[in-house]
Image (cartoon, rainbow, N blue to C red):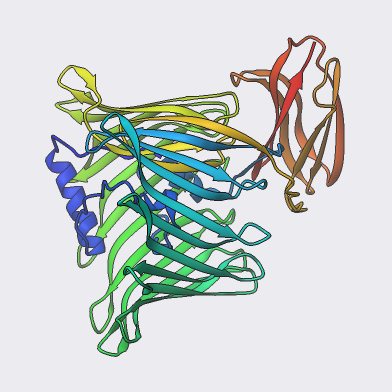
Length: 511
């Protein structure tokens, strides 16, 4: 995920766009916290994320953009890689070190956070997690280092349904003697496991008082059709905001509309419309605001992809005085697994693109981020002069953590898990054997009926070496014998790409 630094220069177009967004959602910009302990995305589960707004204001955020598509990725490898130590360097504070400890199944049992002070690493925070036998996080407790002792600070407790969905959560603070409730949430699900209601409550010291209540509706394909949020005011639930969505025949979202309750009626406020390519990847998102009698365009993002389905270019245009004009653009490079290697952001100023920010990442052959740097353009050179959110992706770019700073360094631990994944018969599956291999391999795959797919062999740098098969698969199991005697010893990947899935299997060749 790429988050942009605070602007030193903003055009009138940017201010108009930001104002419209704030008006649409009744909010104003909030400064991010820089404290060591509260990178909540890393330490505790944030249950107050806006499910209703999940697809709004995606912008250049490639992680959120990928969630729009139904394309799924998986890797056939039980050798998992997890961050062992991550050092974070920041403009605003001293360097911070995160050290992680895992169970044999890869559950993150403990996180030790230290700050670099007076030429040494000093204890700062400690998180300890408890999981059930299937990997559900039951209790997460955070302690602070005070007067040479660990002191309780925060605790989150969760319960789960039989389908491993969060049923309830409870946040508590330590007052020096006891745990005091802060807030809690309760989910309700339908038979398909989709949340249909969510209740958020706050503890007043004597009783639980409602904060907000969400209701969600879905179609037969699991697409959210609408959602309504109510607020607890003067001992009653009052309508606050409503979201409605439409989809095409491929279940791609076509539009999302946000409305506000004025006390008597629902009033239009904000809308986004989505366009898709033949590969079911989003190519354009156009935003509009309600001007009293009609929708007025505000902005639109366009996305271009490479042959692997990764965004390489994205452009933001602003609509003003009856015409579209350039505002920002971002250019991305990726590793084989889709992890961002570089992200260059530019602004359109005086009819020319001007550098703004640059993010650079380096990865190992398994897609683990080893280091990342964030730069800002200062007159005529790149400078590391600001902090922002940096994504640390790992395990073939399937997992991520987030840190705040301008530079991070990571070391990994590998864990051979004993977790057997359940096979989803509606999706394709891929197996390669023998592995390691020298002269020949067998590629065995299972596909649903009528699947268009491509099976290919790549080297560790992401270059395609061989197209094994491309076309339509009948339902069932298929096996290909592939001659690999011409390839040098090293790490390779067998990749199966279908209409809705990407499967990657690691292959070691020993010739």
